[in-house]
Image (cartoon, rainbow, N blue to C red; front, top):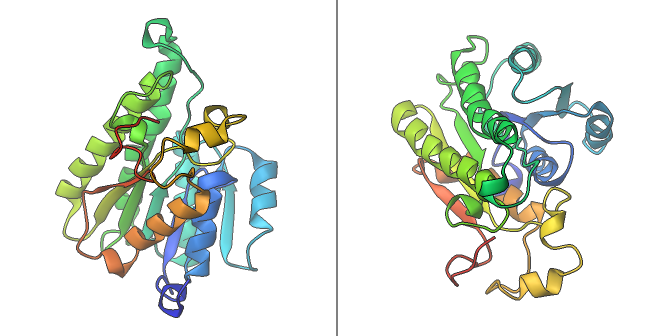
Length: 258
């Protein structure tokens, strides 16, 4: 990281959902490294507390809860307002995919839950942050970064409805960007396979074979995604909104799928 990047987010405050491990945790670390104060959230208390111990003192707030729970959202936003007095960056990273297989065998209740967390939860966080008087999110010219996936752009075997939910997130991102400018910028990142516990079933035991389909000949890392999120959150991206940044090592350009 350059000296410029190390201070790029100085004085900013961020919320990162789903931040106890993997991509969310890496994003939180990158934002803190660049000078932001961050509230990290996740469902499981113990992993979240363990994650918080990795950060410098007083750089993070830690609040446990489900991303699709209105009471949790209210608690987080109130705590950020009380502790930091502002919100500049909202990273909607929390997402689920409890099913794998063909759409013809999909449990519709599971599909509804995926949509509830991945799509409606993303919109709800933006709405609640926007309307929270104590955060001054719109007044400060905030930035929203949503987490999508390349499976939202091209069908991926076994990931049908997850991809559908991410396609919805991408259109939601563009729609929010059109509505919320000029004060708030809204973008998304769309990773291919990243080496996390969440994606482990897609590469475990066959990493070399999977990576061979990527022009850059490797899978993504959480740090790859975190760097892109930090860029979109920063003033370096001041004229970027409504964009979906593919982080895929060239996979889609080569005609591949997740």
